[in-house]
Length: 382
Image (tube, rainbow, N blue to C red; front, side):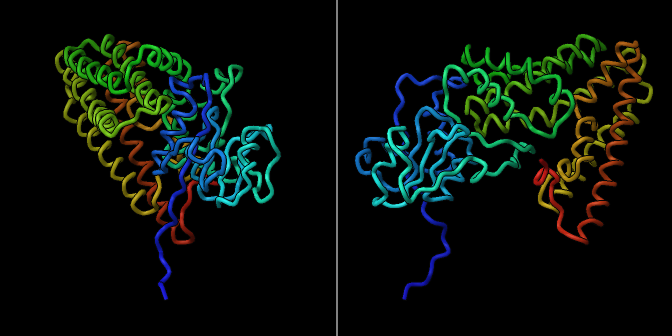
């Protein structure tokens, strides 16, 4: 007797029904977007003509619809389901055997009823609404693309690329202008890595200006850099052009340049005679920042998810904690009142205050874990 296998079931093949004159969503046709999502899931796509007359087992998807990756995962995990949109129009079907009625494709093309043996489902029946990577809850989408809904659909896709838990500048100030500039980048065929490279050059220029005591001009270019730092990530996600190199480049710049800015700001204060306590400020900022990151790492090690999504308070505190964008607000306000030295002190003490909050959060989590495993509040949020 053959021993039962513990290996996961083989992934189904997929067929995308061709759609002539397809519209483009952020520079790609719906079929191209679906093809890339399937590739991420390791699902092989077959030519639609391979089994058009006698449907083969696997996923069959309309070529004029776009699918969130969690929806495609749900289709894989629910054989025999027939996915419809909010208006009950066919979007996709997971056929289980070659004996499944051939009129399943007729249903998918809207030229016949739903065959017996298939069950109708909607996205929320098969897909998770909690996006762990982006720390947000979303309505998992599966939508047909039409000329009428294209602008709203592109807005929806753009906003779905945002982290749900982030700083107040990224969350409230940048979305509208970032969407406009991202649209320009798509039209001009700018790659995300090109935008990242520009922001990296600006980060270096800002260091030079801060060290020279030109705080106002440095801040102006610094804000441009932080804006482009938002655009490059959104551009990569909406155009589906993310890469490992781009991710490393972006995160490497993000990790290094804030501390470089604070250090060169302190150098500028020394150069202008305002940095008598330069060493103390640097110790507070660098020490507090590193210790805060350690606290976040310890929390993840203990509980398996990020500290900022544990409770509502933790998510709200992420809006203002001592990271680059909130600290830039402090520096900008200080320069506006003619006290750049005060700005760096504010950053130093806010970094220390943030560390104190993190230490309390980690301690509370250890106590709470004694009663039950911790979960993110977003998992059950409405």
